[in-house]
Image (cartoon, rainbow, N blue to C red; front, side, top):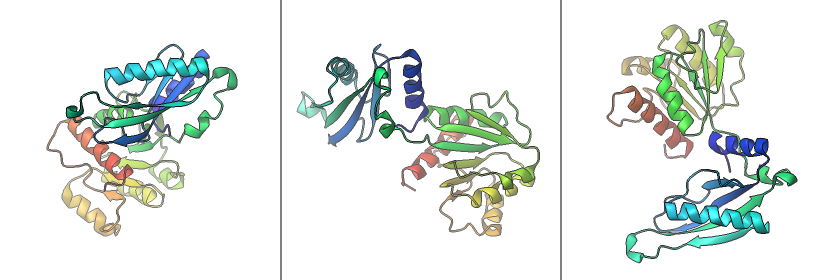
Length: 260
Protein backbone atom coordinates (compact mmCIF):
# COMPACT_ATOMS: atom_id res chain seq x y z
CA UNK A 1 0.00 0.00 0.00
CA UNK A 2 1.11 3.58 -0.67
CA UNK A 3 0.72 5.42 2.61
CA UNK A 4 3.31 8.15 2.41
CA UNK A 5 3.36 11.50 0.67
CA UNK A 6 6.32 10.68 -1.56
CA UNK A 7 4.48 7.95 -3.44
CA UNK A 8 1.17 9.78 -3.63
CA UNK A 9 2.78 13.00 -4.84
CA UNK A 10 4.70 11.01 -7.44
CA UNK A 11 1.49 9.44 -8.76
CA UNK A 12 -0.17 12.86 -8.96
CA UNK A 13 2.89 14.25 -10.74
CA UNK A 14 2.67 11.42 -13.29
CA UNK A 15 -1.03 12.09 -13.82
CA UNK A 16 -0.33 15.77 -14.42
CA UNK A 17 2.43 14.91 -16.92
CA UNK A 18 0.38 12.08 -18.52
CA UNK A 19 3.08 9.53 -17.77
CA UNK A 20 2.71 5.78 -17.33
CA UNK A 21 3.75 4.23 -14.02
CA UNK A 22 5.22 0.89 -12.95
CA UNK A 23 4.88 -0.34 -9.38
CA UNK A 24 7.55 -2.74 -8.09
CA UNK A 25 6.57 -4.51 -4.84
CA UNK A 26 8.64 -6.71 -2.57
CA UNK A 27 6.57 -9.90 -2.26
CA UNK A 28 9.00 -12.32 -0.61
CA UNK A 29 12.34 -12.22 1.22
CA UNK A 30 14.75 -14.70 2.74
CA UNK A 31 17.65 -13.76 4.96
CA UNK A 32 18.94 -10.22 5.43
CA UNK A 33 17.45 -7.76 2.93
CA UNK A 34 17.31 -3.96 2.72
CA UNK A 35 13.62 -3.82 1.82
CA UNK A 36 10.97 -6.02 3.39
CA UNK A 37 7.68 -7.45 2.08
CA UNK A 38 5.29 -4.64 1.23
CA UNK A 39 7.94 -2.04 0.34
CA UNK A 40 7.46 -0.42 -3.07
CA UNK A 41 9.23 1.59 -5.72
CA UNK A 42 7.57 3.53 -8.53
CA UNK A 43 9.09 4.25 -11.94
CA UNK A 44 7.45 6.32 -14.66
CA UNK A 45 7.88 6.34 -18.41
CA UNK A 46 10.55 9.06 -18.11
CA UNK A 47 12.67 6.77 -15.87
CA UNK A 48 11.96 8.99 -12.86
CA UNK A 49 11.34 7.10 -9.64
CA UNK A 50 10.10 7.32 -6.07
CA UNK A 51 11.21 4.96 -3.34
CA UNK A 52 14.35 2.89 -2.84
CA UNK A 53 14.47 -0.89 -2.52
CA UNK A 54 18.19 -1.59 -2.39
CA UNK A 55 21.58 -1.24 -4.04
CA UNK A 56 22.52 0.58 -7.23
CA UNK A 57 22.51 -2.74 -9.11
CA UNK A 58 18.98 -3.55 -7.92
CA UNK A 59 17.83 0.01 -8.62
CA UNK A 60 18.99 -0.29 -12.24
CA UNK A 61 17.41 -3.75 -12.51
CA UNK A 62 14.05 -2.37 -11.40
CA UNK A 63 14.24 0.53 -13.85
CA UNK A 64 15.07 -1.82 -16.72
CA UNK A 65 12.31 -4.22 -15.65
CA UNK A 66 9.89 -1.28 -15.53
CA UNK A 67 10.74 -0.41 -19.13
CA UNK A 68 10.00 -3.99 -20.14
CA UNK A 69 6.68 -3.94 -18.28
CA UNK A 70 5.62 -0.74 -20.04
CA UNK A 71 6.65 -2.20 -23.38
CA UNK A 72 4.80 -5.51 -22.97
CA UNK A 73 1.98 -4.38 -20.70
CA UNK A 74 2.48 -7.54 -18.67
CA UNK A 75 2.79 -8.22 -14.94
CA UNK A 76 5.78 -10.37 -14.04
CA UNK A 77 8.12 -11.23 -11.18
CA UNK A 78 11.87 -11.51 -10.78
CA UNK A 79 14.16 -12.67 -8.01
CA UNK A 80 17.30 -10.98 -6.72
CA UNK A 81 19.90 -13.56 -5.64
CA UNK A 82 23.34 -12.46 -4.40
CA UNK A 83 26.17 -13.78 -6.57
CA UNK A 84 28.49 -14.08 -3.59
CA UNK A 85 26.96 -16.35 -0.94
CA UNK A 86 29.44 -15.07 1.66
CA UNK A 87 28.16 -11.50 1.32
CA UNK A 88 25.48 -12.06 3.96
CA UNK A 89 22.78 -10.64 1.69
CA UNK A 90 19.48 -12.48 1.42
CA UNK A 91 17.24 -13.06 -1.59
CA UNK A 92 14.20 -11.02 -2.57
CA UNK A 93 11.32 -11.55 -4.97
CA UNK A 94 9.61 -8.65 -6.69
CA UNK A 95 6.36 -8.10 -8.55
CA UNK A 96 6.42 -5.64 -11.48
CA UNK A 97 3.05 -4.17 -12.48
CA UNK A 98 2.48 -1.47 -15.13
CA UNK A 99 -0.27 1.16 -15.02
CA UNK A 100 -1.09 3.31 -18.04
CA UNK A 101 -2.28 6.90 -18.13
CA UNK A 102 -4.59 6.23 -21.06
CA UNK A 103 -6.37 3.61 -18.94
CA UNK A 104 -6.56 6.01 -15.97
CA UNK A 105 -4.07 3.81 -14.08
CA UNK A 106 -6.65 1.04 -13.84
CA UNK A 107 -6.73 -0.57 -10.35
CA UNK A 108 -3.80 1.47 -8.99
CA UNK A 109 -6.17 2.66 -6.25
CA UNK A 110 -5.91 -0.84 -4.79
CA UNK A 111 -2.37 0.14 -3.76
CA UNK A 112 -3.35 3.45 -2.17
CA UNK A 113 -3.90 3.78 1.55
CA UNK A 114 -4.64 6.95 3.48
CA UNK A 115 -1.42 8.73 4.41
CA UNK A 116 -0.35 8.40 8.03
CA UNK A 117 -1.20 11.72 9.68
CA UNK A 118 0.38 13.61 12.55
CA UNK A 119 -1.36 16.44 14.42
CA UNK A 120 1.04 18.87 16.12
CA UNK A 121 -0.12 21.29 18.83
CA UNK A 122 2.14 24.32 18.96
CA UNK A 123 3.94 26.40 16.34
CA UNK A 124 7.11 27.67 17.98
CA UNK A 125 10.63 27.33 16.60
CA UNK A 126 11.05 24.00 18.41
CA UNK A 127 8.41 22.47 16.10
CA UNK A 128 10.31 23.06 12.84
CA UNK A 129 12.62 20.04 13.12
CA UNK A 130 9.73 17.74 14.01
CA UNK A 131 7.81 18.80 10.92
CA UNK A 132 10.86 18.22 8.71
CA UNK A 133 11.45 14.78 10.25
CA UNK A 134 7.79 13.80 9.90
CA UNK A 135 7.82 14.95 6.28
CA UNK A 136 10.89 12.78 5.70
CA UNK A 137 8.87 9.85 7.06
CA UNK A 138 6.22 10.62 4.46
CA UNK A 139 3.56 11.57 7.01
CA UNK A 140 0.85 14.18 6.55
CA UNK A 141 1.61 17.02 8.98
CA UNK A 142 -0.97 19.37 10.49
CA UNK A 143 -0.14 22.17 12.92
CA UNK A 144 -2.79 23.62 15.23
CA UNK A 145 -2.41 26.59 17.58
CA UNK A 146 -4.20 29.63 18.97
CA UNK A 147 -1.82 31.96 17.13
CA UNK A 148 0.26 30.23 14.47
CA UNK A 149 3.82 31.43 13.91
CA UNK A 150 3.95 30.62 10.20
CA UNK A 151 7.68 31.28 9.84
CA UNK A 152 8.40 28.19 11.94
CA UNK A 153 5.84 25.79 10.46
CA UNK A 154 5.82 26.66 6.76
CA UNK A 155 6.80 23.08 5.81
CA UNK A 156 3.63 21.62 7.36
CA UNK A 157 0.92 20.41 5.00
CA UNK A 158 -1.93 22.10 6.86
CA UNK A 159 -2.23 24.92 9.39
CA UNK A 160 -5.26 25.22 11.66
CA UNK A 161 -5.61 28.36 13.75
CA UNK A 162 -8.08 28.26 16.64
CA UNK A 163 -10.12 31.32 17.54
CA UNK A 164 -10.32 30.10 21.11
CA UNK A 165 -8.96 27.13 23.04
CA UNK A 166 -12.48 25.79 23.63
CA UNK A 167 -12.93 25.24 19.88
CA UNK A 168 -10.70 22.16 20.06
CA UNK A 169 -13.44 20.30 21.95
CA UNK A 170 -15.80 20.69 18.99
CA UNK A 171 -13.34 19.46 16.37
CA UNK A 172 -13.45 15.99 14.82
CA UNK A 173 -9.97 14.54 15.31
CA UNK A 174 -10.80 11.06 14.06
CA UNK A 175 -8.91 11.46 10.79
CA UNK A 176 -5.51 11.73 12.52
CA UNK A 177 -3.36 8.76 13.49
CA UNK A 178 -1.03 10.43 15.99
CA UNK A 179 -0.69 13.69 17.88
CA UNK A 180 1.95 15.55 19.85
CA UNK A 181 1.37 18.40 22.30
CA UNK A 182 4.35 20.74 22.09
CA UNK A 183 2.70 24.03 23.00
CA UNK A 184 4.45 24.34 26.40
CA UNK A 185 1.41 26.07 27.87
CA UNK A 186 -0.31 24.50 30.88
CA UNK A 187 -3.40 26.62 30.22
CA UNK A 188 -3.92 24.98 26.83
CA UNK A 189 -2.26 21.57 27.16
CA UNK A 190 -4.91 20.08 29.44
CA UNK A 191 -7.66 21.17 27.06
CA UNK A 192 -5.83 19.70 24.08
CA UNK A 193 -5.31 16.45 25.95
CA UNK A 194 -8.98 16.25 26.90
CA UNK A 195 -9.96 16.55 23.23
CA UNK A 196 -7.41 13.95 22.14
CA UNK A 197 -8.48 11.40 24.74
CA UNK A 198 -11.99 11.55 23.30
CA UNK A 199 -10.65 10.59 19.87
CA UNK A 200 -9.60 7.20 18.50
CA UNK A 201 -5.99 8.32 18.02
CA UNK A 202 -3.40 5.57 18.42
CA UNK A 203 -0.58 7.78 19.75
CA UNK A 204 -0.84 10.82 22.02
CA UNK A 205 2.44 12.38 23.11
CA UNK A 206 3.12 15.36 25.35
CA UNK A 207 6.30 17.31 26.00
CA UNK A 208 7.02 18.47 29.54
CA UNK A 209 8.95 17.79 32.72
CA UNK A 210 8.50 14.48 34.51
CA UNK A 211 6.84 15.99 37.55
CA UNK A 212 4.13 17.68 35.51
CA UNK A 213 3.65 14.58 33.39
CA UNK A 214 3.07 12.51 36.52
CA UNK A 215 0.44 15.02 37.61
CA UNK A 216 -1.30 14.81 34.28
CA UNK A 217 -1.23 11.01 34.23
CA UNK A 218 -2.83 10.91 37.65
CA UNK A 219 -5.35 13.68 36.98
CA UNK A 220 -6.53 12.10 33.72
CA UNK A 221 -6.15 8.48 34.92
CA UNK A 222 -3.58 7.68 32.24
CA UNK A 223 -1.17 5.49 34.19
CA UNK A 224 -2.17 2.43 32.15
CA UNK A 225 -3.21 4.13 28.92
CA UNK A 226 -1.00 2.66 26.18
CA UNK A 227 -1.79 5.53 23.80
CA UNK A 228 -0.29 8.20 26.04
CA UNK A 229 3.46 8.91 26.01
CA UNK A 230 4.88 11.54 28.34
CA UNK A 231 7.49 12.83 28.52
CA UNK A 232 7.45 12.30 24.77
CA UNK A 233 10.12 10.49 22.73
CA UNK A 234 12.45 7.52 22.99
CA UNK A 235 15.59 7.90 25.08
CA UNK A 236 18.34 8.09 22.46
CA UNK A 237 20.82 10.25 24.37
CA UNK A 238 20.71 13.37 22.21
CA UNK A 239 19.68 16.85 23.30
CA UNK A 240 19.67 18.92 20.09
CA UNK A 241 16.40 19.93 18.46
CA UNK A 242 17.17 17.50 15.64
CA UNK A 243 17.71 14.55 17.99
CA UNK A 244 14.56 15.42 19.94
CA UNK A 245 12.59 15.37 16.67
CA UNK A 246 14.19 12.02 15.81
CA UNK A 247 13.32 10.56 19.22
CA UNK A 248 9.69 11.65 18.88
CA UNK A 249 9.28 10.30 15.35
CA UNK A 250 11.05 7.07 16.36
CA UNK A 251 8.56 6.56 19.16
CA UNK A 252 5.61 7.28 16.88
CA UNK A 253 6.98 4.88 14.25
CA UNK A 254 7.48 2.18 16.89
CA UNK A 255 3.89 2.63 18.06
CA UNK A 256 2.66 2.67 14.46
CA UNK A 257 4.37 -0.67 13.83
CA UNK A 258 3.18 -2.29 17.06
CA UNK A 259 6.63 -2.38 18.70
CA UNK A 260 5.53 -0.46 21.80
